[in-house]
Image 1 (cartoon, one colour):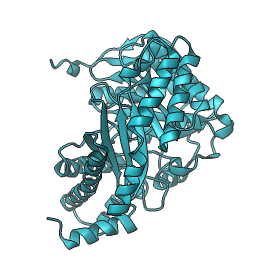
Image 2 (cartoon, helix red, strand yellow; image 1 turned 45 degrees about the vertical axis):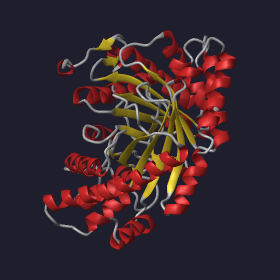
Image 3 (cartoon, helix red, strand yellow; image 1 turned 90 degrees about the vertical axis):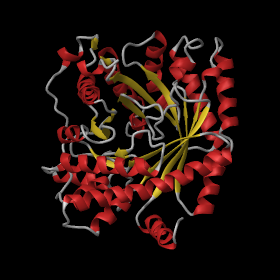
Length: 454
């Protein structure tokens, strides 16, 4: 039974502490839309998405009205398009036509993002995979809502270094094609190792091939709630700190479970997972970095940051898994620079560098996220940064990702403004010592020894 104190507590979290359901993401299987004719494929994709998702936005709005729980975004993820378009797409423009169709369908049903313009190439690229990857810059330039992801490594298969090298080039090309908007196309493109099939968060969401025809996944976010709870135990020992985070994560996840079950019932689509990720926003008081400061750091990036983040991530997961039978996706703590005012403050103070962020990704939920770097950064340097992050994921059996934005025309000391959830950021310094000979070797980094568990 829910008592009146719990109702009051939840209302306070919503009204004063920025608790929200970040997204209801409807995953849609598009494999049955594949075929040899590109026009027919596009027609099938458009009609399936607009039919299955026609009530998604109205359902989210209804739940928000009835329960008073803010639902920030309604989104769609689809089967990786490199699989759907493999038979029909013979040119880059064929794939770009599918991107336009996805964008049109997303606009029609009223969602803000649609993910799944993706390829899974952790071991090697097929001709279709490579064609889709090479189409990404043009696709990001000509669409508003489409998000793209490429999985280039996994613990089981190793790292496809040919794909890593190519992605460095693709990111730079995407930055160039969208330079009139501060290279924002790169903010909709993420490179993964060990990408999960059920991630509801953009830009990395896609509908995994192990999923059913359609599924409802919910992402909940509550950095402000956790920070406020920790303010009440300031100076307490680590046991008290951990218990407080765990109990707070439990309460936040229950809100997500409620929304997910209601959306599933109304839409008559199976419930998949709740992703409890402390995903910050540019809003004041909605920052993961501020949680780390409340734990005891002057700034994120100070000595002790990696330990504090590891503690936070683990307790969030422990609290979440007790609140729902189906916790999935990424679930933990995100550390995007441009979307977290506390992270921005730390960069400006000189406390947080790209190298320290990389160390933090060993223990957070994702990786190097929304990092703005000088626009003249070399493709091989970007590939080297990706390779480092993929290695962390592969060896540690965790999801890691890179969403890096070389902002054309800007350098150290400049700022970039993306707007909305994407926020703003100072341009961060990159180590420009060459890794050309390493990246240009080609081939594949093999899977680590602990991957052989069959």
